[in-house]
Length: 281
Image (spheres, rainbow, N blue to C red):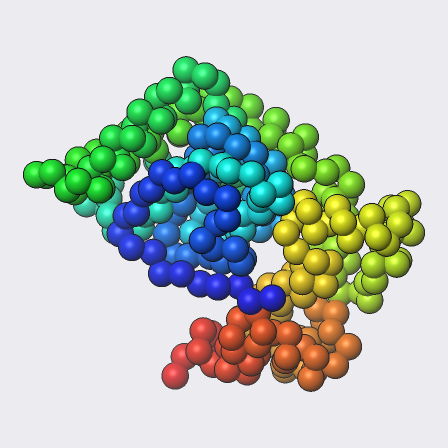
């Protein structure tokens, strides 16, 4: 399953009602993303975590974090999506700015469930940003920078004042899937099959297929291959191992299979990926 890369614009914001996302595949980008669910109930996959997202919830996604929205219910949801690059506000942040607003993206916390009064505040800020972005009144870019900083400060204050450990495990869409995902992340180097994992977690293979796909948006093989390729990229970066050794270390039984899966996800062979991204020419 391909993981797509999208180059972010300096700033983009939209408020839309949807049934299907315009980015159904796993993807990442070189910008910071804030997603706010106005109404509805969807699943969101960020790196190795799956969250159930309901109305009044903020998602904080760091640049280059792999993520995907899954709307398995097929019902309408409304969301605000805000995507921006550091360059959009760097002039302000580089003028002696003391409050580290961008730390919200590296805090390790992806989800914030807002109280009603907080929802009113953030929706008002987003609506102002959407207006400036769509209408382009005089001075709109400066206005957007100011509003973006207000949003970041608002979120940072909430993060600093609320518990940071109350939204992760308890809000996984299915505790069983959380345990399975954790097991895969710890044992991806081994030979793993649906049958073996089903026995380990005392569920039937058919039920395993159902809950894993519903809660992550991926089949077991898709998820396992993505974990292995992610680890392979880290090993390729070290440049200490031959390609065949890298494939073996992350759990692939043959260099041919490793190369085929790696190219299917990244678009490059392991050798070419290493040459393009990690070797100085």
